[in-house]
Image (cartoon, rainbow, N blue to C red; front, side, top):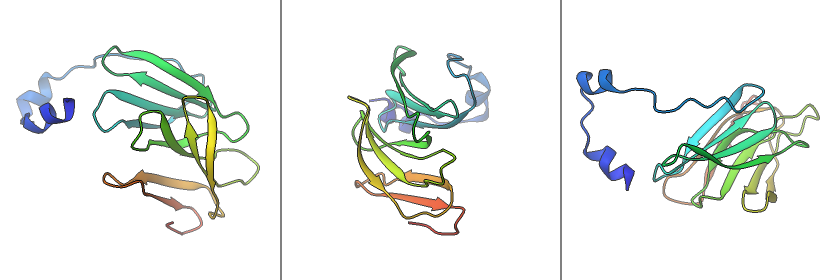
Length: 142
C-alpha cells in the first residue's frame, strides 16, 4: 500500500524540491472547503460551497463519484473507516449545525449528530476507532 511506501521515504530538502503537481482539477463552481485522503491514499474526498461532495480515485486521477447535499450543504468532509462512508458538517442558512454520516454508495444519510449551536469549525476521525471529534464556534468540542 501507498502509506507503507510513504513511511519508508525520507523527506529531505532535495526530495521536497523535486516534487511536482500531479494533477489539477477544476470541477467545482465554488470554493472547496475540505479535502481528506482515505487511510491508504487511494481515494480523495472533497466538499465544496457548491454543496457537492466529490470522490476521486487517486491512482487514476479521475472523479469516481459526485453527490450533492443541496438541503444541508457540506463542509469539513472526512472519511470514516469505510471508503464509501463519510461524515460531514452541515453548511446552510437554517442554523442547522448537525453532523451527518453519509453513505456515498446510495447518497443516503445514515445518521444525524446534533448538539452544536453554532457552525462546526473542525471535524476529525480517530485513526484507530469509529470515533470522531468536532469543534464549533459555540466554543464546544464534542
